[in-house]
Image (cartoon, rainbow, N blue to C red; front, side, top):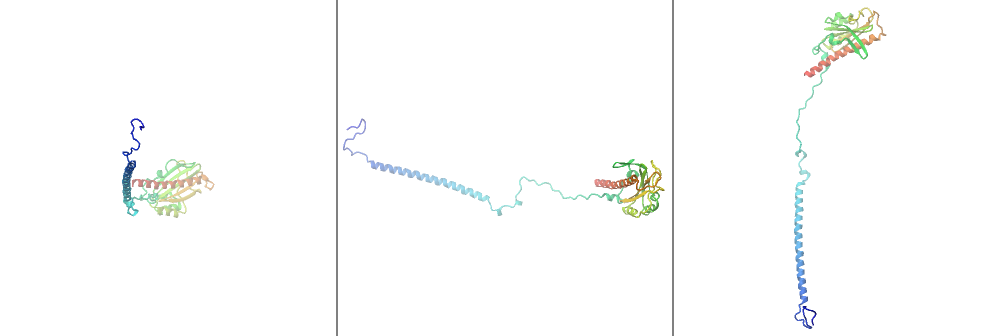
Length: 281
């Protein structure tokens, strides 16, 4: 019986040369199983190899980290760690500035009070302006015979305390005039004694420069004060020959302004000399 052209031809009952399909199937299955085992084994080996590398890498990294992460008690102290990028600046020795010079030291004694002293340095200019008040300057004078330019008790006080010179100046406004006399001593102690011992008399009024004679036989106002080695006295009144009273406000104000101006002039002498000495030193 033929089942087609070119195909194998088997007759009925002719099975002596037929292949053993069971044996072939078993052999094929054995080969496939062996191949799978080999593939699985290789994969396991490869996995173990990769795992070993990764594990070793992690361990190595941990060891490196542990080497850098030391306990706090093994780390260097802050003082031992150099500061990066900082250059120490220059060091300077501590110095203490000298104390400022005291202006009073220069006007308390003739040993330090060396600035020029006369009627022009004490009473400069032709007028005295205090606020809105303007006074004209009359005559000025200076003498080393202090007692001759003072009246009554003041004359003896100046002589007793060794006054070295007496500088006078007269200022006036309207019918009022005031003469101020600055008595100069060698020391502050002498000037203070002169002020304390003064009880009567005053400096002789100084006419001239537009001011008639005043305060020679009339009632006038007298004052006394001292600063440093200087004692200063005023004699003020009216130029019309009449007695001065408390109602003569212009005369009183002029006397007060002149005393304040004289004090400021003496004080300025000390400040100027102290400043010059500090600059020179």
